[in-house]
Image (cartoon, rainbow, N blue to C red; front, side, top):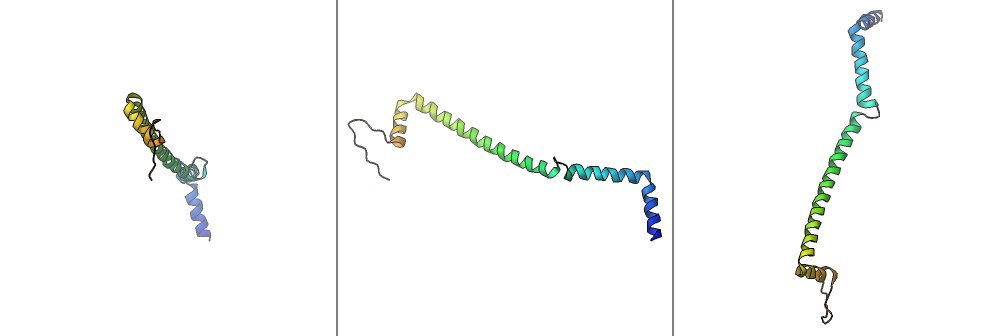
Length: 100
Protein backbone atom coordinates (compact mmCIF):
# COMPACT_ATOMS: atom_id res chain seq x y z
CA UNK A 1 0.00 0.00 0.00
CA UNK A 2 2.82 2.38 0.72
CA UNK A 3 4.31 1.77 -2.72
CA UNK A 4 1.04 2.85 -4.33
CA UNK A 5 0.81 5.85 -2.06
CA UNK A 6 4.36 6.89 -2.91
CA UNK A 7 3.72 6.45 -6.61
CA UNK A 8 0.58 8.57 -6.37
CA UNK A 9 2.39 11.35 -4.51
CA UNK A 10 5.20 11.25 -7.03
CA UNK A 11 2.77 11.44 -9.91
CA UNK A 12 0.69 14.19 -8.32
CA UNK A 13 3.70 16.29 -7.36
CA UNK A 14 4.46 16.90 -11.01
CA UNK A 15 3.18 20.27 -12.12
CA UNK A 16 2.20 18.96 -15.53
CA UNK A 17 -0.11 16.37 -14.00
CA UNK A 18 -2.01 19.03 -12.10
CA UNK A 19 -2.52 21.04 -15.27
CA UNK A 20 -3.71 17.96 -17.15
CA UNK A 21 -6.11 17.10 -14.37
CA UNK A 22 -7.58 20.60 -14.22
CA UNK A 23 -7.82 20.74 -18.02
CA UNK A 24 -9.63 17.40 -18.17
CA UNK A 25 -12.09 18.50 -15.48
CA UNK A 26 -12.73 21.76 -17.33
CA UNK A 27 -13.27 20.03 -20.68
CA UNK A 28 -15.64 17.46 -19.15
CA UNK A 29 -17.61 20.17 -17.39
CA UNK A 30 -17.91 22.27 -20.54
CA UNK A 31 -18.75 19.35 -22.83
CA UNK A 32 -21.15 17.40 -20.65
CA UNK A 33 -22.06 19.08 -17.37
CA UNK A 34 -22.81 22.66 -18.30
CA UNK A 35 -26.21 23.96 -19.33
CA UNK A 36 -25.02 24.54 -22.91
CA UNK A 37 -23.30 21.23 -23.41
CA UNK A 38 -22.32 19.44 -26.61
CA UNK A 39 -25.31 17.09 -26.58
CA UNK A 40 -27.75 19.99 -26.41
CA UNK A 41 -25.77 21.83 -29.08
CA UNK A 42 -26.06 18.85 -31.46
CA UNK A 43 -29.80 18.53 -30.77
CA UNK A 44 -30.30 22.22 -31.45
CA UNK A 45 -28.38 21.90 -34.73
CA UNK A 46 -30.72 19.09 -35.83
CA UNK A 47 -33.76 21.16 -34.81
CA UNK A 48 -32.48 24.16 -36.75
CA UNK A 49 -31.88 22.09 -39.87
CA UNK A 50 -35.40 20.63 -39.70
CA UNK A 51 -36.88 24.11 -39.18
CA UNK A 52 -34.91 25.40 -42.18
CA UNK A 53 -36.34 22.56 -44.28
CA UNK A 54 -39.87 23.52 -43.18
CA UNK A 55 -39.12 27.16 -44.05
CA UNK A 56 -37.97 26.10 -47.53
CA UNK A 57 -41.17 24.08 -48.04
CA UNK A 58 -43.35 26.99 -46.95
CA UNK A 59 -41.41 29.38 -49.20
CA UNK A 60 -42.03 27.08 -52.16
CA UNK A 61 -45.73 26.89 -51.25
CA UNK A 62 -45.92 30.68 -51.06
CA UNK A 63 -44.24 31.05 -54.45
CA UNK A 64 -46.67 28.55 -55.98
CA UNK A 65 -49.66 30.33 -54.40
CA UNK A 66 -48.41 33.70 -55.67
CA UNK A 67 -48.03 32.26 -59.17
CA UNK A 68 -51.55 30.82 -59.10
CA UNK A 69 -52.94 34.10 -57.75
CA UNK A 70 -51.28 36.02 -60.55
CA UNK A 71 -52.74 33.65 -63.15
CA UNK A 72 -56.21 33.86 -61.61
CA UNK A 73 -56.07 37.63 -61.40
CA UNK A 74 -54.96 38.15 -64.98
CA UNK A 75 -57.10 35.66 -66.92
CA UNK A 76 -60.89 35.64 -66.50
CA UNK A 77 -61.32 32.25 -68.18
CA UNK A 78 -58.93 30.66 -65.72
CA UNK A 79 -60.71 32.38 -62.84
CA UNK A 80 -64.07 31.07 -64.05
CA UNK A 81 -62.69 27.53 -64.41
CA UNK A 82 -61.17 27.69 -60.95
CA UNK A 83 -64.43 28.93 -59.39
CA UNK A 84 -66.50 26.27 -61.15
CA UNK A 85 -64.16 23.40 -60.21
CA UNK A 86 -63.39 24.33 -56.61
CA UNK A 87 -66.47 26.19 -55.39
CA UNK A 88 -69.15 24.75 -57.70
CA UNK A 89 -70.13 28.16 -59.07
CA UNK A 90 -72.58 28.23 -61.96
CA UNK A 91 -74.37 30.73 -64.09
CA UNK A 92 -78.01 31.66 -63.43
CA UNK A 93 -79.40 29.62 -66.31
CA UNK A 94 -77.29 26.50 -65.66
CA UNK A 95 -77.97 23.42 -63.59
CA UNK A 96 -75.08 22.04 -61.59
CA UNK A 97 -74.65 18.30 -61.12
CA UNK A 98 -71.90 17.11 -58.80
CA UNK A 99 -70.62 13.60 -59.46
CA UNK A 100 -68.08 12.18 -57.05
